[in-house]
Length: 167
Image (cartoon, rainbow, N blue to C red; front, side):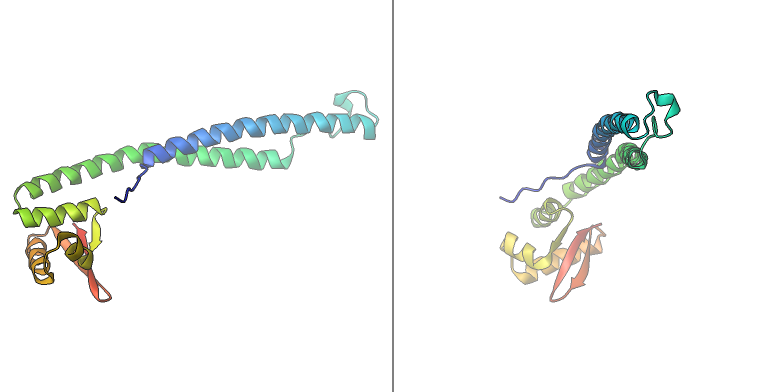
């Protein structure tokens, strides 16, 4: 049996925030190390013993600024996804509830076809429905005509077959 794994926007947002936090600490430690090396080189090259008199001491490399910018952008995107993911989940749940109410009023063959469409992520080719149900092409076409007439599904022509979508 084919398994499909879906990751929600909220989960992806949490992953991005975790990655950005990790990257922040990586950039922080590398910046400190770069500054330490710059101070050592400044003493050797410039001959300044004190960091206050060397123009290169305590300067943060441009790469660090770029790195921190990337971290904050990733964190922002992650937070946005966490916030918007909740709204998306609420909309999805409402659609699923509506679909369950509709499925309760259908005949067995119609339910079977709708369940197959739902299991395939809301879209399936009409030819696949014929294969999976072992119904004739005519029977599948008639059932889809009824479902389309009720506004439950939509068919879009794709080459020699139709793509069946749940509305």
